[in-house]
Length: 180
Image (cartoon, rainbow, N blue to C red; front, side, top):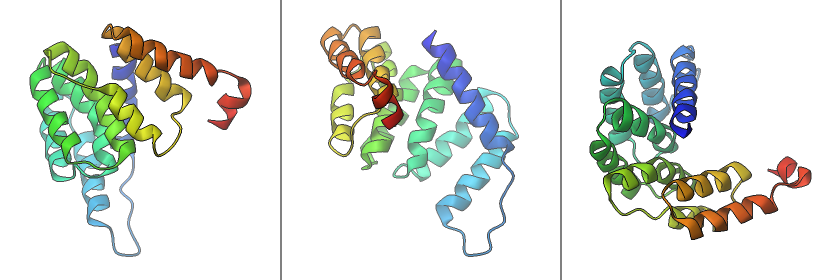
């Protein structure tokens, strides 16, 4: 069920990304933003995972230290890890990207995409460390807490799952939800 939700979410995001019109800049365009715009256009013109992955791999390898690496982490896990049935390759790409990124927000996004691949391939992964790193900069949102709890439970990491589910429960009031 989780893969279907992730796949549907990725399809919406990549569909939106591909459908966005190329914006003409009045001022100088940041090279990363220009590369992102070109990437969005290119990925919008292809349909299959085999066509999308080289574009995603090229972009994420060129700009691993940007927030876009976090946005694309789920696409790597889905397209390469699942659609192309290469979880080892997807894991390697995301692990390399994670090592090159210093932003706790982006590192958390990458770690969330990387964790199921690590479990599937038998590689070590510490989702709690990524969540704690982000929590040191800001409080985790309800959906982030639920994501960590769900992933931990799926991997039978019961203690971590219980910890994050309890934290999510504390945020399950209308006031906390609105504050999120």
